[in-house]
Each structure stands twice: as C-alpha cells, then as structure tokens.
Amino acid sequence: MNSYKGIVFEKGYNRPFSDFKKEFGNTLFFKRIDPNDREAELKKAYKAATNGNNLRASGKSKKAASSEDKK
Image (cartoon, one colour):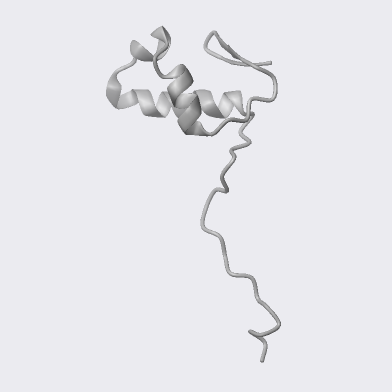
C-alpha cells in the first residue's frame, strides 16, 4: 500500500485526480495547509497514491502519420 505523510491509500489506487480531491481534500491534514499550497500538496499525495501512474497522458499528443499523408 502507498502512503503520504500518514495517509494510507488502497493498493492499486487509480481514480482520477478530481475524485481523489473530493475524497481526500477535506481531511484534517489538507485542511491545515494554506489554501494557496493545498492544490500542490494534493497533487503530491495523488502521485504517491497512484505510484506516479496518472490516468491522463502528460503533454500534448501528436498526429500520427498515415498512408494518406505520404501521397
């Protein structure tokens, strides 16, 4: 199981960040953090919970070359 500063996450946690934020954003640990820093701390905890395996790709996708592009 993964943990972050005393918060233990279930094994294989793979929910989107928005669900993570709803689930853990109101815990006492995050409520004590300054609102300006809370989002960054939630992202760090999310990364720990998901082992850095985010559900969305990081960065822009690129158009793949097709056989029609080669004509």
